[in-house]
Amino acid sequence: MYTVAVRRDFVAQHYLIGGDWGAENEKHSHHYVLELELSGAELDRHGYLVDIVAIEGYLERQVAMYRDHTLNDLPPFSGLNPSLERFAGVLCRSLADEITAANVQRIVVRLWENEQAWAAYRLER
Image 1 (cartoon, rainbow, N blue to C red):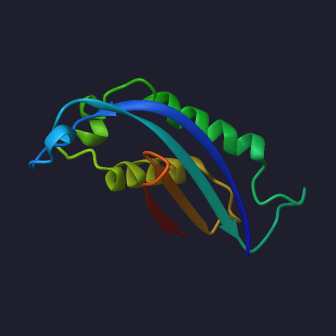
Image 2: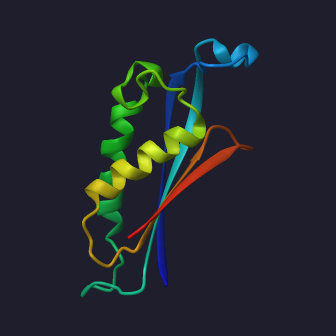
């Protein structure tokens, strides 16, 4: 199976709800790193799984929706705890809707909120 991955970073804010997490209940920022990993068994006629320039475009459009925003204020998180895991799932499902390459069998989003902590969400096609 072939795999290609691209990363983008951005800053967004959030605050956790539904529990007592101390300072995490207050609005704060994270310098997120979003990794998009695509896998499939076949390459296209150009020898690509997906052209990296296309992947960069997918990521830029996603990141633009969240960069410098408060996650809690955005529709995907309405009334929900904007946890790292939930954010990874939101990003992965949204990217999967945009990526139409028939040879992509697996989409993985790994979202880092700092240098030590990340969450991932994987979709199989």
